[in-house]
Image (tube, rainbow, N blue to C red; front, side, top):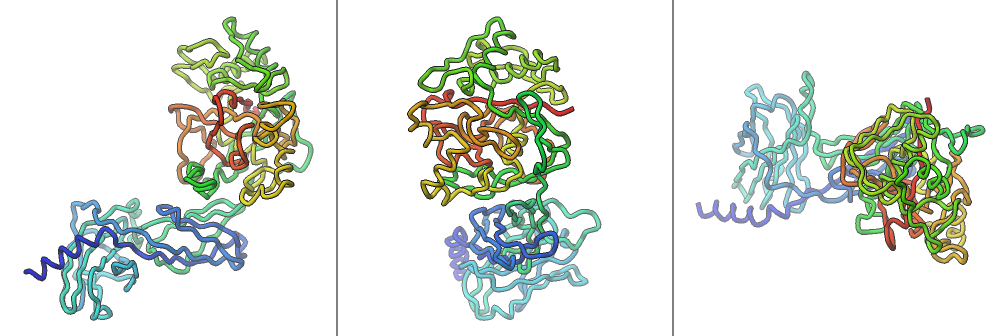
Length: 509
């Protein structure tokens, strides 16, 4: 009895620090069967465990993961006992093969095998290989939609074994598919220019994992772009792209952790988009005609003033009201409706009881997916001009190159002729003919801010409600990390509205 109590106390003292070693190996292929080098692989539950495929497409994910000591106990408790040098377990849900692993307190896996039930319904795990083992061990039994965690103390010929319960790790197996083991985690495989792919795993020491990636299919113009007045037609129908990027820690402190998970977005329509950000002159003209109580934003010479300078100091509500006014001017149906408005149009207006009718043919702010698709313009690099961040920008030539595409902290804060916002369309356009998609002013999108979710999306529009809408594109006060096409973090060094502007889109009919 005393010896049993010592064993139990020992278990309670060390269970909190038990971890399992990770060693997942495999190969990444292109969908034509050739090896794919440079693919990045991460565990969904533990994204800090990272690997890259080598020239032969081979990879190994290595690290440690904790083993929970407080799982949820289901109604059907597993039955477990030790007989001789065998562990025997059974449960009403154990109808087919199971995967069993025995792990010591240092995380080393000592035993791993798939076992089948006996005619009596029991599963047998031999302990003959562990005859000299001493100390604390955990047994993981993966079966169907459950992972059972069993604790065992071994001291010579003494075995003390009890169950802590079971964790429901995945959806129950589909009817008729009784040979499916529990999914304990998912490997997410990403590569520039390829559709990301999740690969379920049943063990943290799984070997020979094979991943085949399909090429992404964004529109890449081959001829002249189609324009209509100030807008360019973006071909998105039947195309897709990878939204986000896989690294949650660009710049440190988890600054980019909202750019995951990377997910494939496809579209069922084309759309028109302004080639430049809405200018002060255009905003003022459209709003003056549409609203008798219009109050002009506070543009000033210090931060950028002039008809051709991009509009700033506007709220999301101001931008939506502009879209409605422009739709009426051009004979289109308005997209936005609302019950009431706070403040005057142009003076940080806020709309209440907001409704967005995406089926209408009028102007609106771009969805976040439309914005990133248009910004990337067929590229899969961090910047739409073909470069990746870190170590770029590393030289004065790199800095100068960025300045040819965007207004940012280097050529804005230190400018001799202008401190902040610049006129639109003075820098190089991307492949879709769009100017200032990085820098100058951060641009309002239609979507409420929300975290990304796993899995492919078609025509995503974001949540219907939220605290605030998202901004994209970086601005004149930002460094290079905020100018990346995937950036979702809004950073401003001064009063925020000096950095906020927008451009509009309209569905192509």
